Length: 243
Image (cartoon, rainbow, N blue to C red; front, side, top):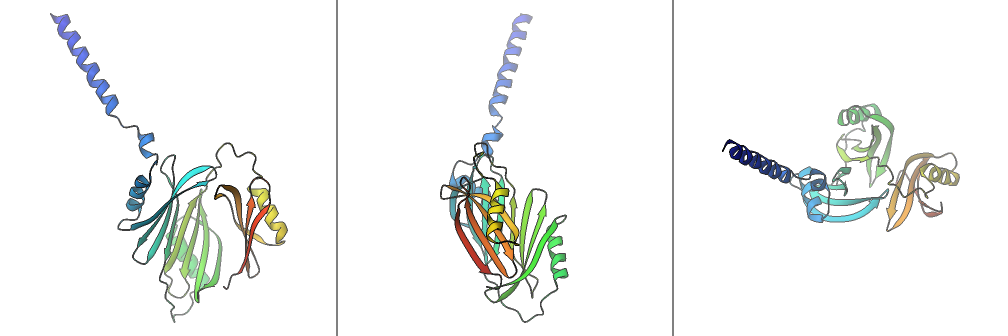
């Protein structure tokens, strides 16, 4: 009789354990993004009260990503999520209504203080004053760990009108045939000797693997799109920093 009770007890414990195992969610799978609806929920949670206006899929360094555009008030947001684990890898905010001001242009040192307060512990890589649609803006580039930041401040009011950070991704296996970002930089610098590289990254442009390289020299900004396999320059753009 005691043996029968013990056997029944063991059986019940095994059943409860099995139910517990089945009830535990597969967290790795739960984080993976497989639909637009999933990524919309993540984006709305990140920017509460915003409206999703567009969702798109793309590849970045061989990683499938979801790109979400949102609007909240006078601000536009562009968020990029890695599909494999649902991680937010890029955040971009832009103020759509920037008004001119008669205030005095703030100093570069004051702008640096604002940037350091916004991104604590980050290192300032570069800072420059430029004009955009008649508005003086300070553009500040920073880095902290594996994140690169770009902040834009209204030079007269000190208001943050643009804020972006991007996580540096590793190229997925299978891209060993690419020329590499350093080679892409060399190709771009050969076109503009003496320039300084401000950005260089891999991208997938409508199915074509490319390196996007941005440079600055004197009062000019240059942007190149270089084929990741062949090193051929596919696009070249040149703009004055005062435009």
